[in-house]
Image (cartoon, rainbow, N blue to C red; front, side, top):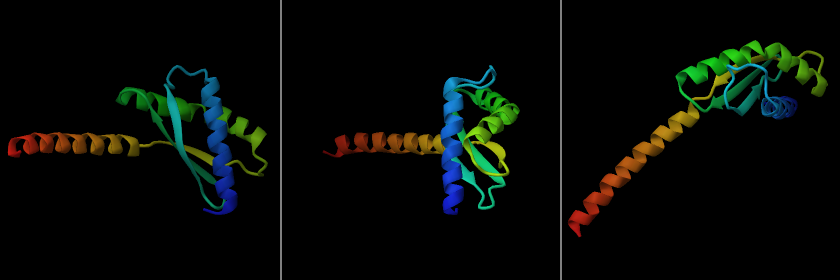
Length: 122
């Protein structure tokens, strides 16, 4: 990523996080956290990675809600960003946190199993 696209990504991240903190008038959008924003070097596309607290339905509904709010979000970004063309916004659920939590629980299970083994051999 170029310096310019990094700066734009950072501004998009901060602005969307601020919009979400104020709240969007869409009941489908749950407790969403923006994890990362990647902007292409030509500034034509911004991938916005998010997580949401809740089940599979909450994830799907939040993604649908965010996608339907794209126009409003782009308008708000237009007030902050001083670029000629606003990037296309793509909201993607970030599975890495789930993956990390799953690995963490597996490691805890393994560790718990070893604790039991150690007490038997002492």
